[in-house]
Image 1: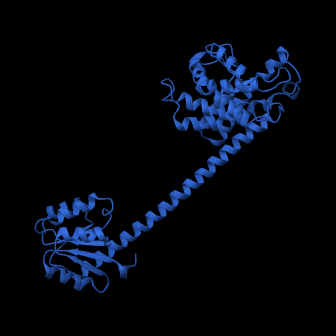
Image 2: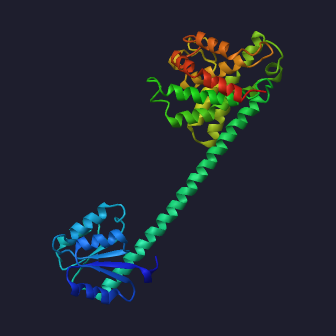
Image 3: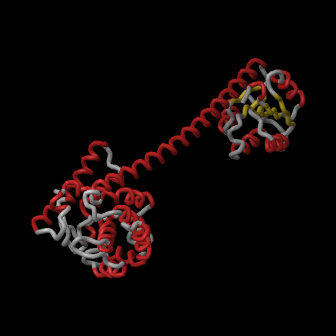
Length: 361
């Protein structure tokens, strides 16, 4: 807004008063005039002025009413209003300012004071507008940076998970498939009364981000066990089971380095440590039972087992989708959360589509 082009609307039912204002301000500003509040509102509706000088005592609609209307409407509430009036009582000024006016000048007018106050309020308005534009630009940059950080976080999680999976050549696209199984199962569970309040969109997003780290602890398992081309001995399996502890400890170390406990790290830690637990308490590492198993780990258990069933291993062939579904259903109430199995049954076709799209071929 250029000061020489600023538009001032003066509203007064007395022509003489309007001429006085024009005489004071016309050299520096474009001065418009209205002889009533109704006319002023019509002018403002067509083109908003930069500042309004408003008399109080006018017939039909007084200046206070005009100000109230202007401040009640989003498109006009930010226009500075200065009352220019013969009402000089303190309560009159207090009331005018309480309506949202930026200033209150009593008649008779002092030309130097009027000039300076108009100038100052226009400068303040200009400063507010500049600051608002800067804030909007800053907000856009913050949004862009947040999106970049989220993308970087996603890539880092997948890369870390892939590092663990790379030590087990049989797993292929396992982390990509399980990540997507977790997402569709969580979405379906969010429709149930039991999990509706817990599985809000931000929680589901965090689960999706953290899922790739479910087997990060495999990095700590010796190659002789992890890559063994056959079934493990009891001693070897006991060592393999320690990957849940290794995963939890690695993520806790990451939390300590960051100095924060972000949702996706909390879920990653739960999943890494507890996704081998079973509903009936026969799993590991702690033998947790039922609701004591974190929700995130219960979801991952179904995703992980389903993918293991449809994937070939040295000790078993890849099972067809239908058989994998049957095995999950048979595990309802023993291996898996019953409510989660019911939700899984509703979306088995989505699991199959993910398995095909991200097949190891």
